[in-house]
Amino acid sequence: MSLSLADILAARRAIAGVAVRTPLVPSPHMSAIAGHDFLLKLETTQPVGAFKLRGAVNTVSALAGDVGGVVCCSTGNHGRAIAYAARARGLRAVVCMSSLVPQVKVDGIVALGAEVRIVGRSQDDALAESRRLSREEGLAGISPFDDPLVIAGQGTIGLELLEDRPDLAGILVPLSGGGLAAGVALAAKAIKPSIRVIGISMDRGAAMHDSVRAGRPVEVEEVPSLADSLGGGIGLDNRLSFPICRDLLDDCVLVTEGEIYDAMQTLYFEDRIVAEGASVVGIAAMKAGRLPPFGGPVATIVTGRNVDMASFTDIVSGRSVRLGDMEVEGRTYGA
Ligand SMILES: *Cc1c(COP(=O)(O)O)cnc(C)c1O
Image 1 (cartoon, helix red, strand yellow):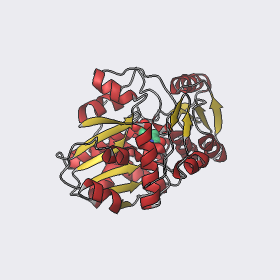
Image 2 (cartoon, helix red, strand yellow; image 1 turned 180 degrees about the horizontal axis):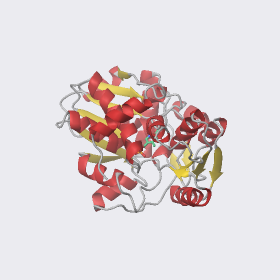
Image 3 (spheres, helix red, strand yellow; image 1 turned 45 degrees about the horizontal axis):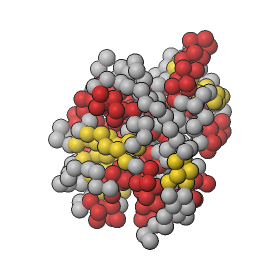
């Protein structure tokens, strides 16, 4: 199975009118830190509050007319996007999630009329349940990242980025299962081979980072993170997103929970944008000096806004946040 720019151009036609062509805006504060333009691709403005709508619409719109419904596992945003796309087609949707998924994400999915199953304490448990339902109830299973139509859908972000700014030298992509990074890297490098695409994850439980380093898909322990949308494994039987990330990403970089906390404050106070921890890892990596010099404009994808507002309020108020057995120490922004 191989994917090309043609698949991503086809995805763009399939999702037009449902997923939004999102704005790319400069961040003056981050540009001053970077020493060149630093741009924000605002996937927070998608109707479900996250980029996953692109891959979900591309996949659901391609299903046969007589399909009985769809099932998926999710850290929240894929489920919400699938629920949205399924409802638009009048299809039953079942979303399997672990107990680590924040309530705000569960509520968003239920509000769209999907059935929610909370199973176990990891994405692997949720994946096993979604595979069982797919087999036993004849529902079409849609992976959050290891599916050619999902990857092509997410890749439409790469097309838009280089249309808006052909001079981009680099793209910073939040990285979990790698559907987003694979699609964006495929599109961007097909258009501009010299561009550098860097995947960024939290430093605890970074499955794609560890897998790329190991040269094969490996398992990680899933722990609570401010970047909850980046949790979970990539599947030991990963077929597509792993080889594409391995071959096309220029590097995989890790950031700490403290750096994610600071980046959420930064994006809020400097640009007045409310975003999830997963969305700000590009900002975190740039502020922490964890990136190579780009020598030209860089964009990061602000992937979603579906953050638990109680934790968000704690963070922008400078209060400490508890993550399982870890505490992220509070600090007042700019103090
Ligand atoms: C899913 C998700 C990601 C990571 O995407 P992958 O394709 O799994 O790498 C990043 N940010 C948000 C908000 C997400 O929902």
